[in-house]
Length: 516
Image 1 (cartoon, rainbow, N blue to C red):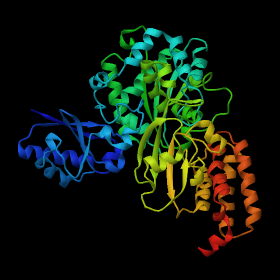
Image 2 (image 1 turned 30 degrees about the vertical axis):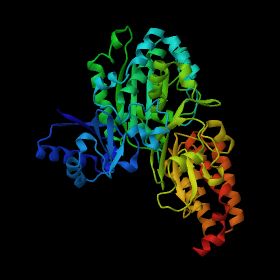
Image 3 (image 1 turned 45 degrees about the vertical axis):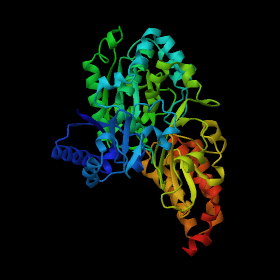
Image 4 (image 1 turned 45 degrees about the horizontal axis):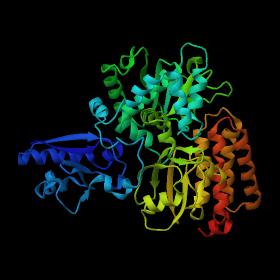
């Protein structure tokens, strides 16, 4: 009997040696004359346990990890084929507390299915959302997404269904679906994980969006730093075309829709929707002034839906299970679940998909296990490089768009970067200004000039030069950038700077830096 093994092909797993584990397993099995099949999946997002092997047994999959290649032959001798106990045995993956406490809706298949197999996707409930969507028809599809309460997972939190409805109400003609996969925030990887681990769910979500608004063409704009995601998406698109889930008659229906992958050059500003459109059109990634909104004048001047990967990948669940099922998760106006990414100096880094409302403390201490260094947590940055820093005494903040806004923060794309008590928050504030200066497209003055002046002024504070005067100048610059910038790059840079100033004032005193 052939025994099936599952090893992640996610880029994070490959980075810590997953390919070497797969090779060692095959070689050891051949040496022993054992019949095995190795299936390369996505990752379950428990990165401190990677590389991990799962073996299929009559009791379900049993996991082992983290492994080194030299562990594999010993494991085979000690009963790996039957899921026998071993010091490296983790038991059933679903029972690992980090996973057991989650509510995986969007990531339900990630780490389980073969991302290259459409058959596997179908066997695990794939394309049920599209089937129901086709029964409902375009108008009802949109209302289902509106009622679900889904908000854009890229950071802005704008209601997805409202954006779709706006495009659907434009005049008939060429329209587009653009998937923003230019995931550039520090400490974020959920877009990459879903594209590498369950690419068909994104294709299904885009297809539903296209039929709903009357678009026949979709683009996935992926940053060049994600080559594995590019390959996974291109392979899945080809498989979907061969099975008529893309093309002139989607799933045997009257609707046409197809998708093309475009690879960006890695400019952070191209994560901003209008700069992304410029780049897609073959131009330099410059931000466009709004209005007009892309929903009216978007790609190539046509009405365009621009959604983040997570927003589109969530749509199949909503259509398959119904709006109410999705809306039953969450709190307030933040409905459903959020894939939250734990990174930085954290003991258990990885992906946590859970309903809105979980507190920041539960995420950092409960799931993350505190810092990897073992030192006390001092700050976390939520929402990427433009997100605010939160001190430990704000760890009671529920993960919710409005709750974070009330404390001068934003949840952004759901990235949390953890810092221990050795972090220098003045340096972090300076990094925000430096990052903005480096990544600015240069179109508007507050962003282009303000960020450079901000970095210079923070340097003066660090050197004890007219600290009081320069702190006032930094605050003034932040006000100008926040309200005068053309897009979120300049407009959000003040969040990390001002939160560092507000919560960690001691780091901005000349005494501390003079002592260093």
